[in-house]
Figure 1 (tube, helix red, strand yellow):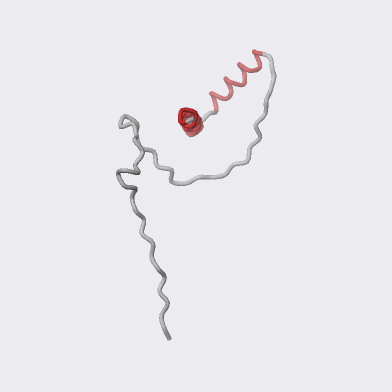
Figure 2 (cartoon, one colour):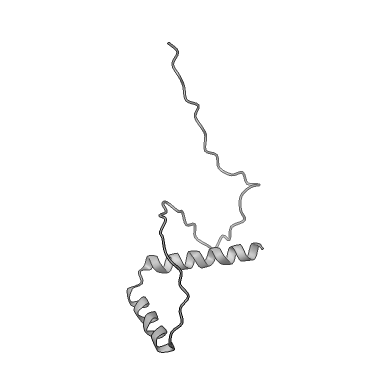
Amino acid sequence: MKKKTTPTTKSTQPSDEAAIDLDPTLPVIKIVSEEEEMHVKMEMEMEDETYDMLVKWGKEIASDEDYINIAIADGLKHLIASDK
């Protein structure tokens, strides 16, 4: 009986030609995992005082991870917009 062998795949680093020109002043961020989250985006109208109160509450309970997620999402939006 012949033994089956599974072909192995090699992971390769991109060549220097294919590398993205990165800003050397920015730190490297590696994405180690991701989770899909369901959410609903709502458009709301409210009084200025109500808006200010909600912003205050959000700042009180926002985590460092919340701020990082906002910054990364905003950075990606700007990068995509600059590529157009």
